[in-house]
Image (cartoon, rainbow, N blue to C red; front, side, top):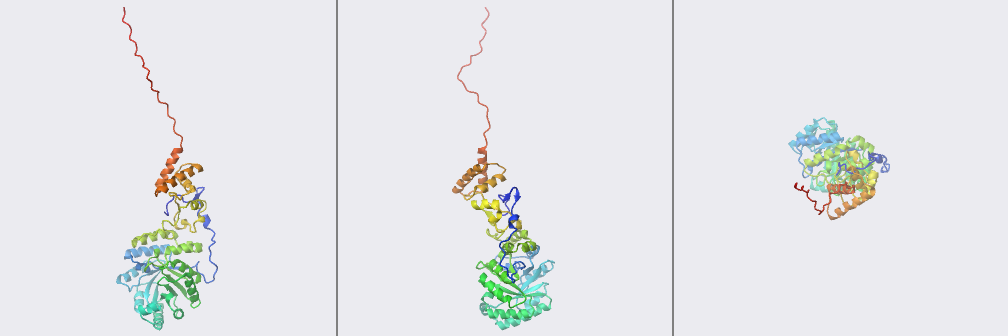
Amino acid sequence: MSGNGACNGTKNGVSNGSAYYRSNPYQPVPDFLSNVDKFKIIESTLREGEQFANAYFDTETKIKIAKALDEFGVDYIELTSPAASEQSRRDCEAICKLGLKAKILTHIRCDMRDAKLAVETGVDGLDVVIGTSSFLREHSHGKDMAYIEKTAIEVIEYIKSKGLEVRFSSEDSFRSDLVDLLSLYKAVDKVGVHRVGIADTVGCATPRQVYDLVRTLRGVVSCDIETHFHNDTGCAVANAYCALEAGATHIDTSVLGIGERNGITPLGGLMARMVVTAPEYVKSKYKLHKLKEIEDMVAEAVQINVPFNNPITGFCAFTHKAGIHAKAILNNPSTYEILDPADFGLTRYVHFASRLTGWNAVKTRVKQLGLSMTDDQVKECTAKIKALADIRPIAIDDADSIIRSFHISLQPQPHRPSEPVPTDEVIPAEEEPEPAA
């Protein structure tokens, strides 16, 4: 219920949210390699996101999403390879002509034909990828490591000759042989690649594995390090964070995490994690209040609902229900919130229509309704709400009705004049005068 003003935690009529988020006890352990406060986002909703089961983005939708991401402040927008289809090529050209602040990238196979086609679309850079694990070398492209290295260098040098950025990434990095991987990265770094990429293509990596691999790679290459994490085992955000701690510089994201299978690191989830760690950097760089609008747009485009527990924008994200929580939240939001909803243009909601409600939440609702009760009266009213909630689920209207009815019962009854007392006495009729003599 983010956005509902009910019980939104004010003190003396003044919002007390921001004052409690100024100090940050959650700074990471200092590390000279860490980039948690200076990372860049490569937003891949229009590439990885197009691989989501429900996704079909026409040109108009792609342009709307690209403009929204640019306004939000992402550094790069990654598009589907122009080699995928003729419409993909035309869409790539159309977005390149928008004049966005974000750099436009496209994602291609490590193949000279793909590279030449992509260069002609007007993109700012190319993201080159090829599988390096034994699984993919045997069952996908069938090439050995010697071929991969030779082709990678040829494609990179061609792209660089056109004055464009180039990233080279292995695919299925965490199931690749470490010696093969590091030798390949060292070779492409030597020819001047702008970034090397690590991809957890099947979502198998753990945060500790990510930290170890990125830290090792950081000692081998001098270029930037991009990371791409799938979320099959639920570690995408944690893995992205650990990658930055270990020295990675760029994180791939998509809106709502949509992508192949369970998708990749979600843009909103990453913002939730990073705004706690590096609040000044994140708030100054990204327009966080635009996040909900972007997520709603993408959710509509792919015909899904924003999950109830989605970081930041899920309808339960800033909802508090238990009585012990409500009392503390109403006094100081930081007691049970690590994120400030105001940073995202949202408000908190303290749930008071349940058997778990506390009298402090009901007291706040009483004030919002413009009513007046003593604390003892609020406690008695709260007991009535709990009693009904023990019988059946109740809505806000039910709780409000109980509060209003209880308030009316507290008011003194108006004085009414006494009714005439009925009597059985017969009133004699007026006597008639006697006739004259």
